[in-house]
Image (cartoon, rainbow, N blue to C red; front, top):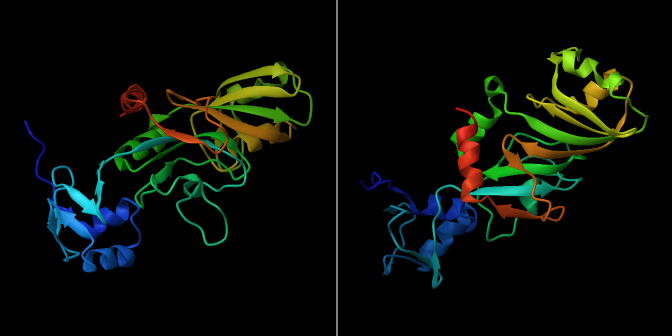
Length: 241
């Protein structure tokens, strides 16, 4: 059975696909540089079915994909946001050909935190993965200024009071005296750092290595990204909801 017919404005589709702002896209259309099914279209409000109609811009065929999923190995120095007037965002790391206005990061990582970040335009999946009641686990690797012991981190498994909520680790382990791993279900502001600070430990490096069933691809350089594999997308969608 075929999908239901979905019609959307031409300027909206082109803008979401990173062809420029609405104003830029309308100028392209008005200039006669856009064709639908080999016919020139100059009406920005022209309705098309992006999944069926052949879309061509300035002689180049544009392939429309409704949902995209990227795994990003976030570096330090970028904020987890879609736009900012003063700081670089994680979307600035994307190649122009991959940028879409409807992309957003799922969850957040602090500016100085590195590692796994999911970028998508699938709002349903994003909501499902960040909904508190779904308790999607996130694994972090961390390094501290002070030396730790396994016993000293035990309180994290019982829960520590951060003032605004009781934060509990699902799993915690010491890898050596100043390195460890922590799994949490929440994702509050500076949560891992605040949890360790309650115990007297100062985190000097933090990296997210897992988000639900998604595991950071170590082949990705810091700042690099790739499309998710079909199996990874399926695992994410099956993990909660």
